[in-house]
Image 1 (cartoon, rainbow, N blue to C red):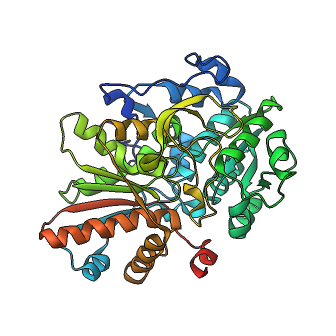
Image 2 (spheres, rainbow, N blue to C red):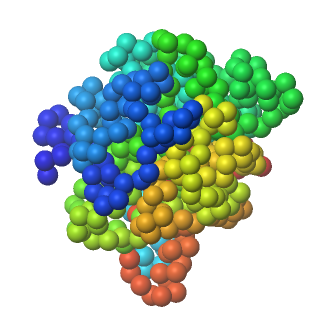
Length: 424
């Protein structure tokens, strides 16, 4: 297939997949936060590298992966597609369960896929510093690693609840040279307004985004990097599904059900969008399940409308499922899923009936994680365990119906830095 390179990295996709090329109806465009009019992409140049903006607005089906990024990917990609034989045996199901294991990547999650691409684009444009937010720390540590590789410094605003729950991720970021601070904090206007009222405010991704964007707008030598939600990020993560498609094809299989957890939507989009696109182009139509926390249910409990991606209203208005920019989620252990909104493209597919949303409670998530750990021997991140909970439910349903099917899910990260969460 022409999108797979025949060079040294001939085992890797040579292009990212853009689902917008196959949509009959496009999502509603982002709006300018001040005027409410459709956003001119040039207005984003003060925030994002120009190369990222180009990818964000593109409708081309295939977007080439630069050689330097392919070389970085080749250190850990393709990630393994694993047949969950022991989990299948434990559940006594006729379903065949496969998982794409992104925990083998640097920093242990899928986030590094887009971090490397964004750091590369920034370095090519002479950006001196990338500023970002992070929930559980997976994205922050991924960007810190990528920034160090491509010579760009990184500053991270880490949601306070996770900053205190997950000190290991903070140490990992520091080891890569990143500056990490609690959010909300006293170093920005957006943070000070909340920090002065409550120094122990648990924070949220919306607040941390506001602090990061404010910092970038005040420093022309810096640019913002986001780990989920935006079309460009979802584009980068398509490498997961493209690899899985090729790996399953080598076994003569196609998935009947594709599952991923969702906070902002990037790892779910990464595993599912290539298969959604295949169905839209006339191929096999699978079932797609996006799994979110019951206490932060943007897809199952939010409204589909325009809203800001941050709490301060600095970012463009995105048409997405949202709980409202001022929503402060409980300090659950799946910090990477504590976001008030959902990626516009994921929201669009849910509204179109192409993706089913499901919310699960935290106790069910950790029970599923333990079942997976004791059967497959991998401790999943609490975020990824949401997908596992849905996988177990689907496998048990297949058992009740005595139906053989292929289930594919994204194990988006390991839980080695989440031991305290399991202990609690």
